Length: 153
Image (cartoon, rainbow, N blue to C red; front, side):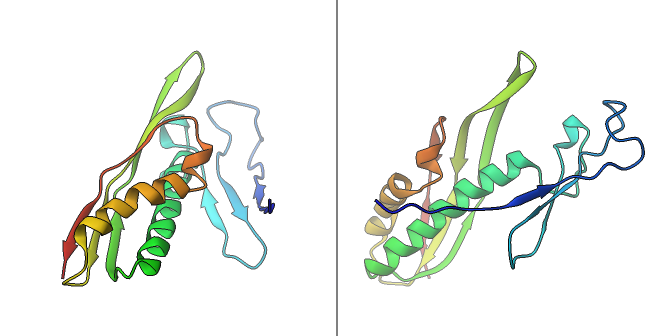
């Protein structure tokens, strides 16, 4: 078994008086990794964050969506299906209670365009395999539903 290790850094700096008050401290942070652009993050605006920055919940949903997409593109390439366009409007649902929250589901809605004359049925079926192989979907403890659409161009 191979092991892969991923390293990032999250940095937060106090502005003003730090965490003196729950309502006034900054939720802004930066995610960095060697030789990559920074990702500007904050908490969800509901939790006093900055709506112009990515929040951890959005990043989780984006991780699920992009992992699925990358597996799907791989599977299409090795199965002779030429994908011309891939778009996903992914959503995640989180519920709050007892002072905390947790995700209860995520939904991926990929819309794929393949080259005319391709095998649409096989292209659709490969989503099941991509879901089974997706590292992120295999790591979460909530259901991830995939409802894909295939079109030919």
